[in-house]
Length: 349
Image (cartoon, rainbow, N blue to C red; front, side, top):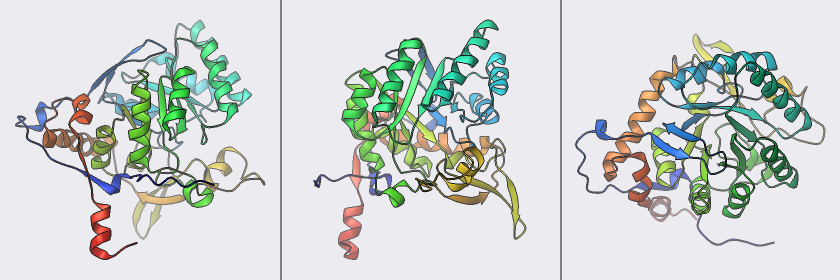
């Protein structure tokens, strides 16, 4: 047993300190980014925000809606082959779209079949997200090696991990974007059920430092509940930010709508919840427990309404520190700890 004494921080533990700025308007801020991925050598330009590959938010409709604003989406992995073929063959979006998959043999076989059929039709999948809850297993690393050997030109996002050394290993093993986050999601209960996790802001800072030293990239996955949290994630060094709860409840989501006391609500749940496993795995296996929860959230209309708040908030953060581009934000960010001050005021231990 070992205890780490270093302070680890979440989004709620800090604020961004304002600095002198020559910017006169939020309209002067460019929040798009340009990347060349280290392994696929593909190029990217867009606003680096990605809809999470949950079955409620990682939908074709969400991908199309976000692409109009140069944002991206990671599709959920439960679409059928015919649906995926029709979507990717039509080339319907401008932003990056990630095909999502697990690490089982059926997952890989399904992807091979879709790729072969797309290639015969003159299409292709350019981005893949390999998604597991625990990115520290040998099975996960073996799968990364296997995938990269067979598909060297695909841009690969994979995770999830929360430490610098594992981020470095994944990049050296062929991953372009390391997905960072264990337990911070609003409908994830891994920290409660397993006692495992890592404060998300510190995870981003440490993993970004490790990735950037190898010219790799990271995607902060989970924990953002407001536009200010996205600003903190980008300020901490995240190259991409993935959102689930903030995109939930919109018209583009594949969610059931129910009426509660005369108000329309949508069901939102974690992908390790009882609801998700009942839908996609025939129930919870005897050897495991649910690590997600189900909640009802207000119906929020088209996602474009929320996008204005998200993008406006990030632009506003940039103006407060004088960052004319999103790339500059991490260079101009100084975090101020606030939780320690509150503990001192209220006598919390």
